[in-house]
Every structure is written in structure tokens, then in C-alpha cells.
Image (cartoon, rainbow, N blue to C red; front, side, top):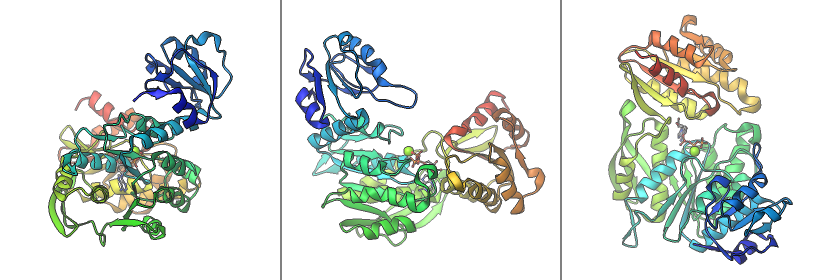
Length: 467
Ligand SMILES: Nc1ncnc2c1ncn2[C@@H]1O[C@H](COP(=O)(O)OP(=O)(O)OP(=O)(O)O)[C@@H](O)[C@H]1O
Ligand SMILES: [Mg+2]
């Protein structure tokens, strides 16, 4: 779908600084290296890079239109049109919103402290097997790739809409107040979910109440016919749902969409009976942990909101496999490895430890944990609590890395773990060497920490070092 200069000006409220040689343009990009003939290049200013410095490069690569918020020399920009806006990041969102309204798919938006990407992948897997109005949706669903959930990633996702899509499933993330409101205004969801509310990104959002307020903006941004999908098992999301006046679908123990007869299969996932709309279907979910069962119910509730039948929901949920570094089950030297190194916050740490605790293992359970970052003033208490949880969920050995490791160790010792079973490592390689000496066939190793801790390097070092 081409962009006209008029559309760009009216969507962004920008001022035409120079009319180029063309009046219709191709895709919108923010990376000058991705500029192709006739692209629209939006010069974003980030912490490390300033897109304005790449304007000339974009023009050289054939950009048809440049969107900027600073004065730049026009002479070297060849044939490109130049539009000046107040803020290029806002302009990027405005363009995405314009495209979303023009293409008008059903938009399903997902936020929450944990489980966004997992839920998004589950919803997408369901939709790929579903039909709406008698027509299969396969090939007509747009979804957020990876974790493109912020003020840059969400617009770039929606800008990929071509006009063929019937549904868009998008992830909205936040680290500062106001971001969800803005992302919701851009995405204009028809159906929205808050998967969970917990202590994450507290440096920006301050408290769990602050997190709830921020996430709740997604429901406020629903139109009059919008549907709020409410996690009835989370007290914070329940409260957000209670405030919402429009149509709701509650999922969880007492919800309209619920699970029954759960059978945890350890690392193999969970089997349960999915109940919705007076019907029931037995589902074998390959993702383990009670948190993933909750994500599956949330995804099912979103699909129900669209009118998808239970058969497609079941087929979609059964097709989902663990994603890279998110509760992925791997093996090393005969031991099972739960690779959850992608990220961590208190709720997801507890979910992972609970899963490790629930596995029936023939050998020791080892937790290799790195710091949980971005917890602001709560960091101390939360790391002490993490250590206590490790002990409570029956971890046999604890290997720790990071600035908070001492606190985690103190929590674990206070909760009864023996001193020689709690070790603070100096580096990933050091921890790997310690684990190598302990891990045995039949045992289990959990790897987890915030993204910045790169805990996957421990597994890499184990593999590099051989058995
Ligand atoms: N509902 C949940 N409750 C608690 N922890 C969860 C839940 N769902 C997933 N997790 C944990 O959080 C980790 C990240 O999951 P996922 O990537 O789906 O979350 P996300 O919300 O997209 O995270 P991010 O904020 O990094 O985008 C998982 O590996 C798992 O350990
Ligand atoms: Mg995510």
C-alpha cells in the first residue's frame, strides 16, 4: 500500500520543507540500511544513534521521503521530499495508526508484566488454524515479530499491514508511565488483555499499583464495542476488569473460559480440559508451568472474543512449542535443562522455580540464577525473597551470579539451605565449571536471570567445555 505525500502530512501534522520528485512512496523504515528505492525514512533519535545523521545516507540509498524533527541540510538529499515534524517518534506512531485505521483488521492487543510474547504466539497459532465467516484466516494474520513491543516496535509492526490481513495480534510493552496509553491509541485494539500485573520495570513504574495503573490503560483505550479479556485469578487484573464497563471475557478458575482436570507433565507440559461457551476439549499443552496454563486460557479467551471455535483453539494451543530461552527444555550430558534465560522478574522467577520444584527428577535440581534488574527500591527485598523461594521449592544447589547474588544467598540460607550448596560465581565460565562438577544424569538445571545477565552463556560454556 503506497503512501502519498498528502497522507504523510495529514497523519503526522508535519510541514513540507521540500517537495521531492515523487508523490507516492513505499515502506516506512527507521534504519537507513533498510532503505530501498522510494522508502519513507523516519529519522529517530535514540540514546545511541541519531537518525538525522543518516538522512544523507538514506537519500543516497533512494529514500523518497525523509521525516525529521531537526534542521538538516537539504542540498545533499537528492530527489527526496522532506517533512519536518515536532517529534519523529510520535510521527512514526501516527503513521502506524493511520495504516491501522485504513486497513481496519481486528486488532488483538496484549500487555501484562509476564507472558505477553507467549500469549501472543498462542493466539497467533490458534488464528492460523481458525476461520472467520467461513473463510480460513491462515496467511491473513499479522503478529508482532519477536519482542517488537515498544514505541518503535509496535508502529513498525502495524506498518507491515498490507491490506490483506483480517486480524493483527500485537504485543504492547512498557517501562514508563504513559507508554501503554500511547501504544493503545496507535493500535486501537478491538480486544485487549492484561496477562498479569507484577513487580517489573519498577524503576519507571515505581510500584505494583503503578504497574496496574499503567497496564489498565489498555482497557481504557478500547472502543465502545471493545472486549476486555480479564485474568480472574490475578487480583490486580481482576480489579482492572471490574472498572471496565464494556464487554468482558473472564478467564481463570471461575471464568467463562477455564481449565479443569489439570495434569502437570513436568517438563513435558500440562494436560487439561478447556471449557468455554458450554463446550469442552482436552488439550495437551507442551509448555510447562501453571503460568503457561494461565497464558493458554488467556489466549483461548481472546480467540473466543473473536468468535473462534474450540476445535481451532485446541489445535492452535497443541501446536505451540517452547520459544528460544523461554522455558525451553534442552539436555546437557544426560541432565535436563530448563532454559529460561531470556528474562526475569520476581513473578517469572517464582513461576520457573515452581516448575523446577514440580518436576519428578532422579537427580539433583540445580538453579543457576542471575540478578533481576530494574527493580528500583524493591531490589533488596525481592532478591532476599528469591533465595527463600529457591529453598522452599526444593532446589538442591544454587549457583548465583550478579550484584544481588549475596542477598539471594542470604535468603536461601535463612530458609534452610546448607551453606555448601549455595555458591556465588565469579563469571559465567566459573559457574559453568561449578555446575559441570555437580550435574548428573537424571538431574535438572534451571537457567534464569534478567536479559542483561545473559545467563544462556552458562549453558554455552557447559556445551563448549563438553561433558
Ligand atoms: N503468566 C505468567 N506469569 C508469570 N511468569 C510468566 C508468565 N508467562 C510467562 N512467564 C515467565 O516469563 C518469561 C517470559 O515470558 P514472555 O516472553 O512470554 O513474557 P513477556 O511478557 O513477553 O516478557 P517481555 O516483557 O520481556 O516482553 C517466561 O520465560 C516465563 O518464565
Ligand atoms: Mg515479550
